[in-house]
Image (cartoon, rainbow, N blue to C red; front, side, top):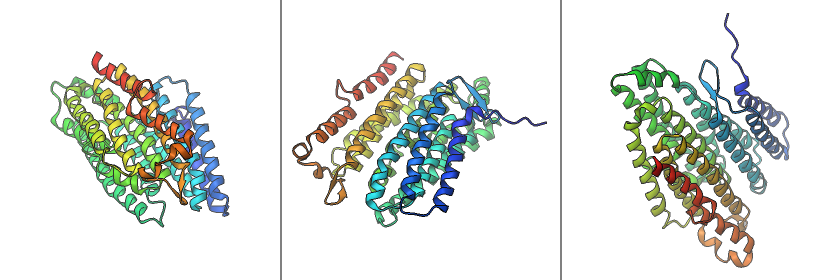
Length: 403
C-alpha cells in the first residue's frame, strides 16, 4: 500500500499554493475598483505568513515527495529572504498600481506564484523538481514583465525575456537529460553517490553539467548570459524591475549553490575554473558598462550583474565558509536594492516615475533626506566602508583567500 508523503516540510509551499487559488477566485468573483488592492494586501499577508511557517520549521534537514523536496537551514534562510523581498516589493507596488490605474488583481497573484516557484527551486533535491520550480517562476515572470499592456516597452521586455528565457530553460533541460541518460538518476544524493563512485568522470555527465550551469547562469544574469538583463529591466514597469533585481536572482543563486555543491560537488575541479571566469567577467562588465548609463534601471541592471560576480566568488570556494559568505552577501544585497527602488518609487517628476539619472539633479535641495538615503544606499552597493555592502564583499573575499 502506497504511503502518503509527509507534507510538513512543504507546508509553506502548500499554504502559498492554496492562498493563490483562493485569492484568484476572489479576484474573479469580486469585481470592483478596490479588488486589486484588496487582493494585493492579502497576498502580502500570505507571503508573510508563509515566512512565519518557514521559520517555525526548525531548519533540520528533512525530505519528502520521494526525496525530491528537501528542507534544511540553508533553504530556510534563503526562503525567508525570498519571502521578505516578495512581500516588500508587492507592498511598494500597491501605490504604483493605484496611480497608474493598473486595476488588475492578476499582478499580485503572479508575484505569489512566482514566489512559490522560487521556494520550490530552493528546496529542489531532484532534477525534475528543479525544472518544475524554475518554470513556475519563469512563466509568471514573463507575464509580469509585459503586464503594462499599454506600454510598448513593457511588451517588448516581456517578449525578449520569454524568448531568451525559453532558450535558457531548454539548455537546462537538455543538460538534465544528459545527466539522467549517463547516470540513470535524477535525485541529487544519488547523483553525488554515482559520480563519486565512478573511476573517471563521465563525459556525458560533464556535458550535462555544463548545460545546467549555462541555464542557471542565464537566470542569475552572469556574463556572458546577461544580454537580456538591461533591456528587460529598462522596459519592465519599475516595481517589476525591483522584483526582478532581487527575488529571482536569490532563488536561482540558491539553486546554483545546491546543484554545484551537491550532485556536482565531486566534479569541482571541472566547474570551479568556469565559475571563476563567470565571476570575473560579471564583476568587470558590471563595473565598466555601468559608467556610461543614463537610465537608472539600466544602471541597476549592470549593478546586479556585477553583484552576481561577487556572489559567484563565494561559490568557487565550494565550502561552508563560501556558502556563509554568499548568504551574508545576499541578505545585504536584498536590503540595498529594495532601499534604492523604494526611493525611486517614492519620487515622481511631472506625473511620472523618475527613470533618468538627470532627473535626480537638485534632489539634495528639494528632498535632502531622500538624497542622503539614496547616496548611502548607492555607496553601500559600491562597497565603500564602513557601510554594509563593504562587509558583504569582505566576507566573500575572505572565504576565497582562506580557501
